[in-house]
Length: 455
Image (cartoon, rainbow, N blue to C red; front, side, top):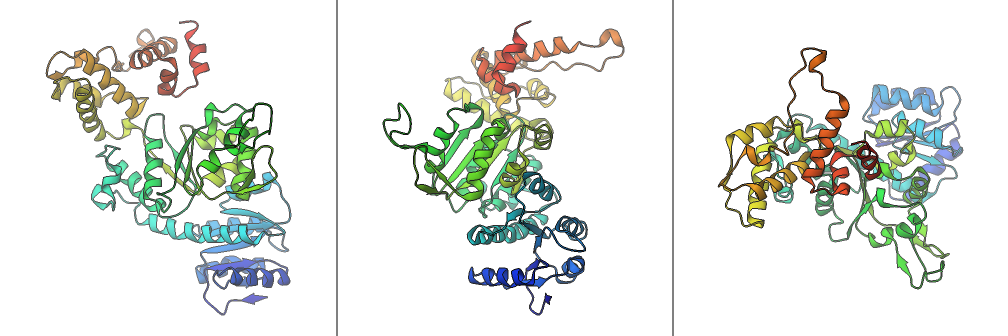
């Protein structure tokens, strides 16, 4: 069976012709484009190349070629085409494998009409979004921004950040779940708030959830809330973060730090768009957008079992990576001057400029704590500087030691000494606050405490 008489952005592939017609009727009733249909999986790649379909909906189990093989063929020949896998088998491993091959989504029969139409709408939207972003693969300029004033708090001049800002503008126009990655201190939370401000949900709440702060016993209560009497001590109804963020944006900061057992509960809400408060039998519908962030390599986190693959693919409908400060050399002097004026005014200091010597030294710092580290460094230096020019002397105990390349074994610096220096420096920058120092170093507080024991 083939129905290709009308040009359509959607192709549905299933060897069951009755199901093909039923899916077509469902799409039309939901106001979606009239789809093209085929029951022969062997013809799919040729049809996609010929008709430039934006979305292909594939049954998993078919004669001749199964859905995963067809998916791989499509992604090899037409990588921009979005694909949704449909199957009667609800298996996490199969879903993750399909998404690794490039599937946008994975739907289980019997299909829920509302969820199916939402998935199709989002897949078509992502196709248009990715096509639009292809226009911005070349180096970007800040003059290309439509809303430059919104990014004022993220002081930047490097072209790498111009691309990040342009990506934020583009994805803000959609309702996609966005994953923001980057090292500690690059500004992931600030960018998430900007995406919210630029979105259609800007009048709704922006709720930030620090995922490492959750304990397994309190997770459901904090996320979903409870009704009065749900447990001993529940003396009143409580809204969880999902209800608090209704109509707006929920920002899950450091999502890779959430325990895998709790990730499954989060996944269910994202997929079903509904949940129950603890102790309640009344369904609460979810209407929000999820932005998430991680300072980890998410591919490594999935391989290590730290991050569930199926959750990642739900959260990562669009991805923005913020490069570290050391790879944005043009941003260092302008950020340093910004923080100088900010903290000089805050502390009533008449420091007007940064010395050439200090400016040069800052350009050679690795800044493992990125923008946050630079601000802490300037803020601390402002307190000790006596003149009108912020000098290198004022930060000599804070600035990274640049170690020349060793010429032999005798010159080589042992790892434990470098580690001790780096931890000491983080503690000085944060005034001895171990929690802030751990955040600056990109490690957990317990890890820092363990490293401090032999020091």
